Amino acid sequence: MSARARLNAVWFGCALLFGALLGCAPRAEQGTVTVSFVGDILLDSAPGQNIARGQDPFAPTQALFRGVDLSIGNLECPVATGGAAVNKVYTFRAAPSTLPTLRQHFHAVSIANNHSGDYGPDAFRETLQQLQATQIPYFGGGNDATAAHEPLLLSKRGLKIALLGYDDYHPRSFEASATQPGVAWAEPEQILLDIAAARRAGAHVILPFLHWGWENERAPSAHQRELARLLIDAGADAVIGSHPHVTQGAEMYHGKPILYSLGNFVFDLLDFPENHQGWVVRLELDRSGVVRFSTAAVLIDDQGTPAPDPSVETLCGQRGDAAPTPCAQRP
Image (cartoon, rainbow, N blue to C red; front, top):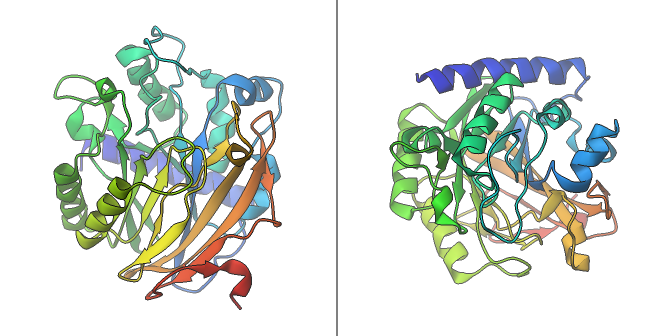
């Protein structure tokens, strides 16, 4: 086990203890593990300012995570005090003081996205250090390419879950190299190797989390569909996506779920009505993969704070289904 893997195991144990102290609800079914994913989390801009004022942007959605064993999100910004902004339209950098609030609600985060490198390699490296110091496990990035592609292995009730994170949206300069810190890039051949390595490491369930697709497109592209199916054919048990800032629906492929985009979660800079909507997906897992999944909608206000939105119809499915169905139609 690498040094980073050992550190992540320690942080993960601490996070679980913290969750237990919060009084998590019992799990859904004996012998299964529940994992929730959310889309983009921005701790800069209005959400970061509100945290600095003592407000918790995650508090209104706590009920959606009741009974969840592990909660995972996409951290859409570096968290650092140093570095210099790169030349791109939007650059984000959050204060390290925001991380304790994040840690109250999430057991791990993906850092594989098109904003993790916004303040250059020094700020990216500091982000890794800040996450380590706050005991928040991460995946999808690292101090070099080998570390960036290493799965985060989390164990719960004897079930070992591998989380893999990938960026598939420019700038490619954020990619980790043999000597440079950065994100794991979504090269299909490398992802297949990573899935095989995770299985050899003893993972019962493998969950790739991809940052992909075109912004504000309500349907996944042909590339997203092709890559998602390729990963499931290679042994992934589900594929989860983020980045487009809108939800993109779900499908079942060989009886396994693909959630193309969960949209935003804690995020302001909302230009269109559909940017205000996001999904929380809950996966119920056993040693054979995903038993069932469900989604719940959130409505995000102008400050980037989400709240449950039961008025929006979302999708559910279970192992072997040919296609998802509206959750309201499930017993």
